[in-house]
Length: 126
Image (cartoon, rainbow, N blue to C red; front, side):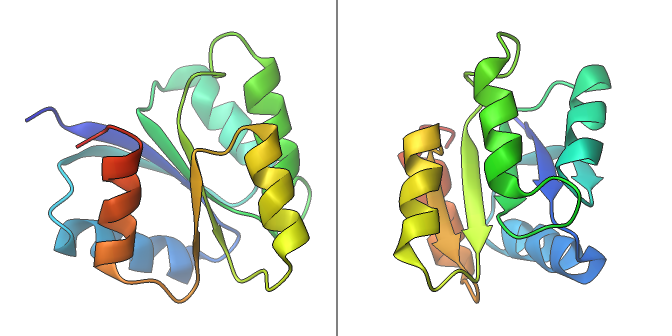
């Protein structure tokens, strides 16, 4: 089974660590995991690292997840990379906007390892 290189984008370092533990618990075949605190850091990280999937929070300072998604989809090198949005957003509007911008899927916080694994399956990664 191919190891997946991931980029986790969330302004909470604790949430990034939780997500890594959840991915391990879900038996996701993880290779390298890159972390970014906002969309600007994520874009900088992607310039030097190739990833199979991006997991991104929606609400972040500097550049939020929707702005990041727009940048990714406008860039030839990254437009095909699956992006799963992770959100506390109660608003359906933000989720709809993410899907319209090209998000592969979304998960609401708090989430379970099964919910995360299901998104990987839906994206055809495992």
